[in-house]
Length: 207
Image (cartoon, rainbow, N blue to C red; front, side):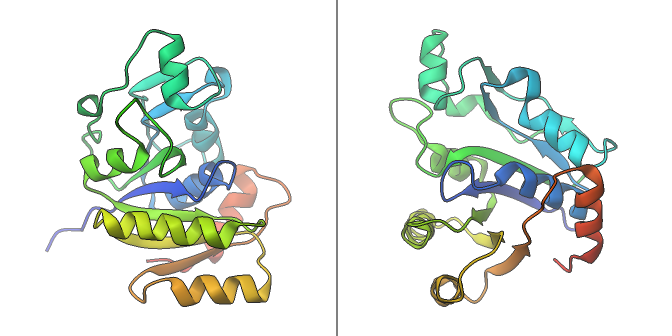
């Protein structure tokens, strides 16, 4: 029997929860390709460039479908350039390797007047890894994200607890996550580098 290809869409419960570093960690762990469908802003220091460097510089990063100038929501950045983001433009890059796909912001980030990130995930027909960071409101945002995925019948393969969580926050989160969803715990990294990520990956036990 041939090797089963792993395809994962990395999304978060909000912005700045650590999707990119978690993508680099999983890219290295699974020896996977990486694809960022939409880069909105920071084109000179894109998420693809960061992940390529952090993951060791020896894995494949596929080009973005949309590269937009403004560091704002994709629909706004696209509008500023006279572009309309279209779902039918997105296709998972052809590869025989595992692939990690990183979204923009959370599930309800708008792409255009009709579609949001969760619609892109549904279109790609791919399992999700949900990145969670501790902050006031993270329980609410996590449970709403899980409900949104359930509503669309999108499999939640992993929940990534990124950083340290108070005991009672983690207890509630774990209580509300389905048994078939696997938990990945990523400790806080004082410095993010290919060395610190490689060391962390060596200690991980994720399937």
